[in-house]
Length: 499
Picture 1 (cartoon, rainbow, N blue to C red):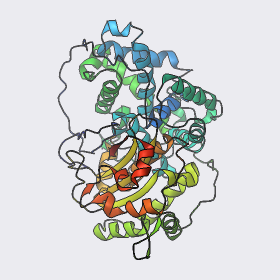
Picture 2 (cartoon, rainbow, N blue to C red):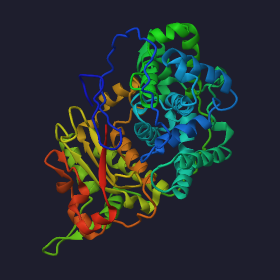
Picture 3 (cartoon, rainbow, N blue to C red):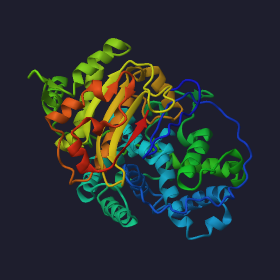
């Protein structure tokens, strides 16, 4: 995670999904002119392509909040105030703006509910940060958003996977996805609907329960929409994705709306983040885990990725425990058993979502003590990447592998980034959770007809040393395997989502 500048953007070919965490630095607000350019995304037609889970999740959270129904009018007035200060009036009044404005509406409330500025930089990072929050949260940190995420990952996600195969290549498919989420909303308990106008007397959590430690003036926490910088940066991030690269929202825009009016409503949106509807009730149904210890998990992946060398010796490409042990030896800032426990919990959560099918997308986890992960642009500060191969026509993902620097497991640094709302979790192993969130997103985008598992010959050629040569990830993984099989897949491309 970067310790000098605030952002590190990395250019990728297929999907924008990059990340470096950095110290939260103040920067001056320049008085902007209202965006008057005509380069609005005229082809913006919800052709989301691959890795569309974040778009679906953003809509799901909006659909299960009172911004959708009970408090719809006041929320849409809030959105309208932002749009009027940032967008050209002719564009606002055009039919062309309808789709973008709807997506902006969904995306903004979701970045209130899942507090992560990094999650606001793209739909892919939002999905990964949401998954990280879901896996990482301890019992004290569970709020109404967590229970909505639980429903999504244990129920809604499975429906999406079963009903929709591959990427979103036309608007009709998105409409059907949206319809499924609308129907699913009827199954979501009203107790966990996110109320943007919650009675303060119902709040039963403190920011310290959520894990925040940044207090000013003795008792005031500054995170999420309680932090003006988070508000302006998050809205700007969303606007750049959805409307125009020139989109900017800052303090000058807020002053035109009205400082008190805007600030009061922004804080009101956060009200339910301090509410746990099941605080003293055992709500989550306990189910049996697939693996009870790290050795069972390790053996599962060893068996899955087994192959024979040229001399007939049996080996395995995926070495979970060996990698964890090596990470501990290089970075003894944590207990090895804690890393084992967190990894075991992570894989058990994933198994409950995807089952054995996860083997159809995930091909390796690599932990390294390298200072940089090279080959992905300016790699300074990158602590983890998920490399996903896909077809160039956006019809399907094919597989993903993960590389994580063990330096990312720093408790103090993760807490700092969490306090300033860059990450959704203060768990020291949140990079691990985040990167596997990207793999789960890739799994959702995999065409169900691509059901073949990697075979012995494939695993022989996708060992750690081949996927990550020196300190550089291989550019084209599929070039390593059988060329005849590669021809069957057609044109391939890759993306790297970074942390």
